[in-house]
Image (cartoon, rainbow, N blue to C red; front, side):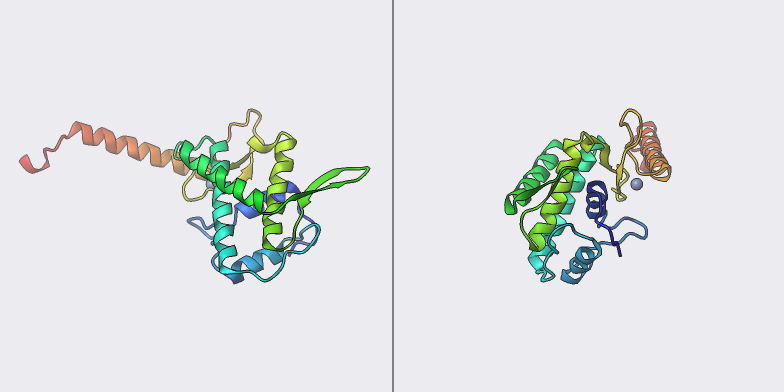
Length: 199
Ligand SMILES: [Zn+2]
């Protein structure tokens, strides 16, 4: 369990990486208990989100998380992520943003954005506020989701030219192997046109 308040980057990545992959990562927002547990693991700044989580909160959490991942996939130039999918993801982020105000915390040393309400909506607003901080500091385009399906792991792209599309070399080689096989299959299909039954 974390004891210190996560940085905006840590919070956004933690929320985005609550979905399952093909390996050990499992879906965290399966039910009210799953979402409650996840909320309890984050050291929220400001008010603790209410622990009364409803089934509709869980649906909303998954919807918001998936929308965020879609936007992060667009940062990786994922060819499988279409413009309409990104637009509908942005609409979901907008709706979540409308539910709870973002509050300003200004001190002599720093300015932070945080949720202006409590409860589960406040937790979601905290994630959106963190993402906004990243965008305002010019880092938003570097927050990406891995193009390898179903990995889609959110990561910070530290490459010089912001060109990374995969979270690891393992994912990038898996994806190129898949592309190679697809090309090979296509070539084979072209070179033997429907002649299987006439041999
Ligand atoms: Zn990956």
